[in-house]
Image 1 (cartoon, rainbow, N blue to C red):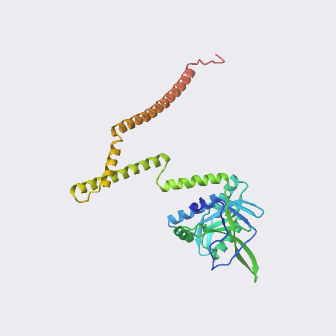
Image 2: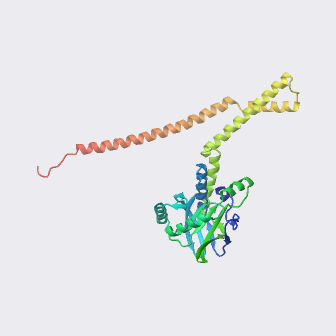
Image 3: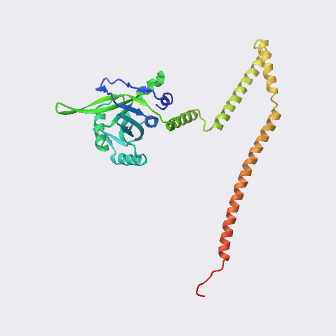
Length: 325
């Protein structure tokens, strides 16, 4: 999801995965805006569960702001839940504590709903939805489901559709029983300026980390090292070819021989002695700067110790005045 997010700013996603086994309708009139931090948190939660081999579904809470028909989902946090034959049981104390902490930092936010993984809501989700209503006090929380299997299929087919679906539950009385129907809500990915900068930074950091680099300097030196290794391999191949030509195992190709001669002349033009001298000069300069910085710091610490010693010595030498003697 995080990879999709960096590519699609403001893309609408009104259709989700088909749900042939559950009753889902399309809802109209709501304007739901998902912000990048929510998608990044959910994707990170799902990936950690899958990496650790945990079979249970990820579960978390959604917070944000709602004004009229516009709903902005700004942030999310994980929930502690346990699987049971009657469904998932939520740790109410943990939920209340985390929600109060977030609302203390973001007083404009409120609890909006919950998220989990799955293709479409099932019977266990209905009981979970009812429990969340009782715990949070929100009579109509939203539900976001992430289709993990669809993520794997889309990664293979390079699909550009987010595997995220937003649902709004509606309860009505039918035959004396309360029946819950799920309404699929269209949403858009919305970003503020600060969020856009942060997501770009996360995307660049993820790309750098996936390539094995920890800094720009490491990336630069790694590129130079790879270039030198590749040049060495190519020179070895040319040397083996020239040996084969000299031994008669390979035919003579004058065009290849001329190109090999030009490569050899280019290598001789680098002047290794001058390069080594320049490298040693730069290394000595850098080492000297580090040494000067160390001496400056040591001098500052020495002056600080002397000032403290002088202050303590002055206090000892100062005569004491007794008011009665």
